[in-house]
Each structure stands twice: as structure tokens, then as C-alpha cells.
Length: 205
Image (cartoon, rainbow, N blue to C red):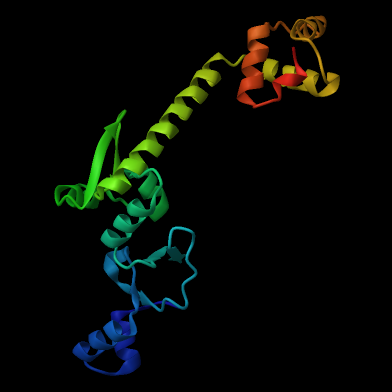
């Protein structure tokens, strides 16, 4: 499925210059890890949703080299990417390339919290991506606030079980039922569980 330049040279028994021309004509994909040592045909590769194909830890991109791949991924992203997000997608370190491309103004970046988010350098695309990223950040903060007020795991389980078994209940009645089972719980804790698990509030009054 994959081969090295030396392996291809032995296979075709031609000069290095001729082989390089053939590689360019055929449009072989070059691995973006292992120092671009490996080649393959795009028809062989089975790309994932990000255009990446991994074969025995050798990584290929449908977009070509790593630099171009990063730019395409960021441009097509609805909310940009952080360095960590890109590293998880590409399975390689990308911090140096991101720094270089930002310096060349090929990418735009903004600091959010403790890390940078990288966006398209196109003003219209950037505006849409930045807006979507802010929405994601706000949702994340809201979820964190809910998690912070959740009761202990055992209490959460007890509340959920009681809701499932009892159906429609007043919150004060739910508290009483749980207290009878030696589970100390408040109405605000019940509210936090309902919010976190997105339960239908119409079931509880």
C-alpha cells in the first residue's frame, strides 16, 4: 500500500530524476510524518472525515503536505481550531507550523483563556468562525456552572432513579420520598440534575 522513494526506485529501475517526474505526474501522496519518507496512491487511501489516512502509523492527507492540510482544515472549520484540537486530528505536533503561518498572516489567531484559537485569514470566514467559537465557549461555561452545582454522584443517581420510577412528581414530594430512603437532597439539587440531563421540566412542578 505504501512505499519509500528507494523502494520505488528499485521497483521501476529508473533514474532518480525520472522517478521524481513520474511521482509528480501520477500525483502520489507523500506522508506528512516520518520526514515525508513514504508514498501512496490516493485511490488506495481511505480518508476519514478530516481527509486523513493512517496506515501503520504512517499519515497521509488528501490535501497534500501538512502546511496545506492545516490551512484547509482551519478554513473549513465552523469555529477555528486550537493547537490541541489540531494535534488530536493530525496526530502530530503543529505548534511550529501554526506559529510560522500566523507570522506569514496565512492564518489569524486570538487568545481565548490559556490558549490560542486559529482562524482563517479571510475576514468574512473569520467573523463567522469567531462568532461560532464564542457560542461554544458560552455553552461550555454554562455547562461548567451546572456541573459545579451538581450534588454527589450517589445523590444524582438516586434522583434519576426516583424520577424514572415515579413519573410526574412535585419537587417537594420527590424530596420527601428520597428522605424516606435516607437520601438528603434539596429542591435546588433536583433542579441542577434536571438541567444537566436536559430532562423535561414539565414532568416536575
